[in-house]
Image (cartoon, rainbow, N blue to C red):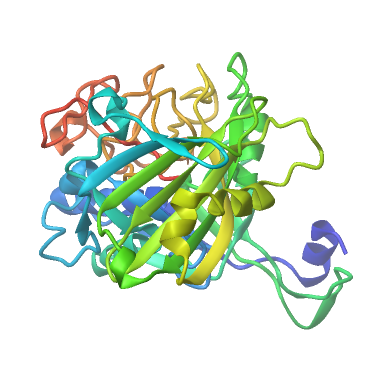
Length: 410
């Protein structure tokens, strides 16, 4: 049965009203929810915020190790250390290797590009960070609905975004309702924030509906295969960050590998391949398995045990790929996509002020946002609230270098 037929037979759907609905419980969505509640508290307002997360719990769909610059977290939650944020392992060293099939050449530290110098950063589990952000968000009044995926964008008659609807439950393999069938629920909001990640299906619909990508360069994408290992304690080097280029990547595509040493004798590693390859028989998963046989990588993994693995898409930088920041129907702001900042594809920063602050053209620091027209105002980022005076401002880390790590896609 089609969605229209289901609604005609079992509808109407129940609806809940909120000030802000956020689609996606990753770093972007949770950081947005936390900041909105913070601004509301500062101004003595009550703003209801709900986050929809398709996973069984926040962080359930994130298998990722990451190198994280805490600059944005310092601004979003200044006392994160006292609150127990899982940033436990500082970076202790950086290596950039160019691989051949049997050998590796290390780039001298002084020749490494600035974005590969990770002093002041931490090697983290992004899943653990998301779980902690979710716990903190709930402690300040954010509602989180895990296990509910947003399946449909709802619109007002004037074309503005009204909210979203969750997917139906209890459908059989043939698409017909079973005895346990239950209609999805509508969530209406003054503001709807789409923080779905690299290629969100609702974000695609909204961008297409309002033509927000008109005149922009085509977005480029990559696929990353990631694994978590427990290794021999004698081989553990907590805090070491290793990136590789070259073998086994062919000249007609782009990509590379990473291997980060976490605490507790664990390493997180991955292999990222651009999705522009022309060979239909090319397999990113098999290329990663070849990469793991390289002597420098195999030496770390031998005698260890793989604890988990999975794929993840990511956006990659293009000269001008970002959707327009506004449309006739609603204002927009975008953080969950590539920027033009040349940055290794494994950095993680919750998107407060630092997110996209080095991007060109100028971008604002929230995920894709749709605002209901003629709605009462809610707290809005402003210089007085701790946001940059200009969307082109560049954040400065506590080490003094003008570098920001705006992506969360490792």
